[in-house]
Length: 309
Image 1 (cartoon, helix red, strand yellow):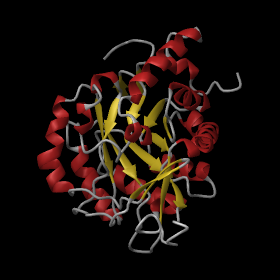
Image 2 (cartoon, one colour; image 1 turned 180 degrees about the vertical axis):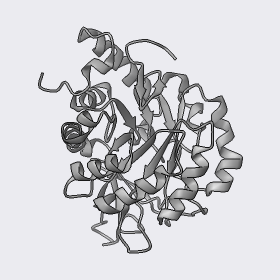
Image 3 (tube, one colour; image 1 turned 180 degrees about the horizontal axis):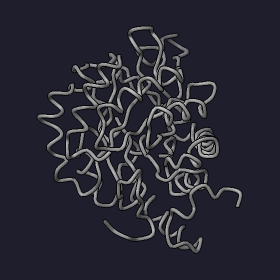
Image 4 (tube, rainbow, N blue to C red; image 1 turned 135 degrees about the vertical axis):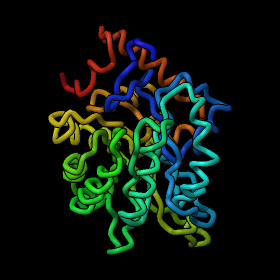
């Protein structure tokens, strides 16, 4: 791994730079390599994988918004067995780190997928997407501290060889409480955050623009809100616990990424920007490199959480 000013260790995993391609935005493993040289970014995150294959929601399930993008994909994926057998082997040739995203509708489903991921040498970090309904009580793991803590403690029993990351939902009253529950449960990294619950309506037809009605808003419109959430989680939980944050939400340029770093993130996720220009991460990396040098720092890690200083 490069030892330049952008190189970091995320929960013990070395990355060439702090840019992480977010789950669900760049295919299963290496599809985006046709447009983006993956040697230039820190890590790729897989599409969220469930135990059984899922077709997802009917069209339309992605629509534009003046503030970014709304999606209601519905966790469409090929399922655990096909992913492990036919998709994951491509990760062996990746010139960057690879994170595996896990989703499920019960503790048992999370456990099955997470255990297989823990045994896969291609996967450096196991990331839990906790915005999925818990079929046993209709609640979402990512919206209730006790449910999240219980899930994490169970998953930690099977994820023993790799760091465990949790992708937090922003659709909560107190994201710091959710972050604290995740760390209490054994999370070694936090992704802040997932998409915001939202809706769009065609005013002429009076129809919902997404087939499901509501979906998740991502993109530039949520960025300032997530900057605040990253800072709150950093000050309230992560700094004292020594748990790194991946700031995720509306990063389109290096300044957006630098804001996350100053707010308390150790790494920066990119997602919606990839739909606009899959080469955007290259400009972000170059911009961050120049920024760190202008700040008079030897490493970007020196700037984590330095907002206001």
